[in-house]
Length: 341
Image (cartoon, rainbow, N blue to C red):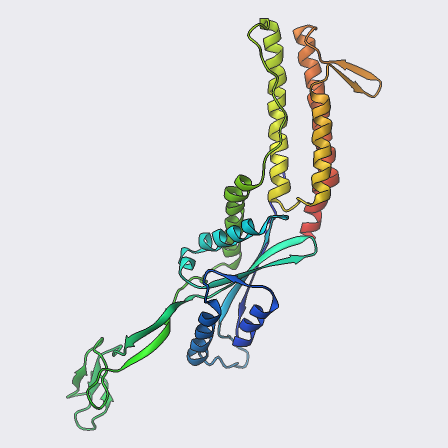
């Protein structure tokens, strides 16, 4: 019926000022209790190790990336507990490395839309300071004459230190340093096609909604089926079966409609009120023995021929479908049109 409207906005933060400005704007939540201290360590590491990207004439200019941000739309009127669950499930489904890597998030309301905005870091931040032995990252060859480092190809070059060997000071003591973040950055935000990448993120949002939101708060409303009694005649049983088949088909339409409303971000109070009115109207006519369509009266009781009953039930079903279509035209299609504009 209605395609789900997934929204995602991605951008990078290219300075420590942008990172701290992000934190100051709204109440912030995180997967770490000590996120502020960890962010300071991550920012300081980036300050000290960022490449110096200089703008060159007629060439693209690059900026260091301090953090990545997502802004995603979520269904309206979720309670805070569900919002937190939604945020944490989305980010871990995006990349399982965020079970360890630091991320922060906040809730935003913009007009009628509700959003979660994330700030994520791709370098692991240690919860406690770590001591690391400084090692040679390659073989160290020395010129025996000049007593300085040289290439392996130099005649007479001496292998003074092997790759991975600890470095020592002038007194022969192993050199160590205090580290708070990992030196290696996780390659999480790497993609060849930005569109395909963002499309995959939209699928993750839809997955989280369908596996979580429907189970938690979306209780599908439906019409009750007609009870078939053992004492019913065979003909009455057949007629009730036809009626139930109609009710099952209508329930399927109503179920799809409710999924579209809740999972497509259309669950504002007015739309829900109109849907409840639709459901009440359908429920009030679905079980009547007589349906009035203008000046035409259609008998829906069991005391008529099997052929007439089937035709009249079809008339009832067609009329209910017309009510559903009218509801969609007045309440659902405007959402789709405004979303595409």
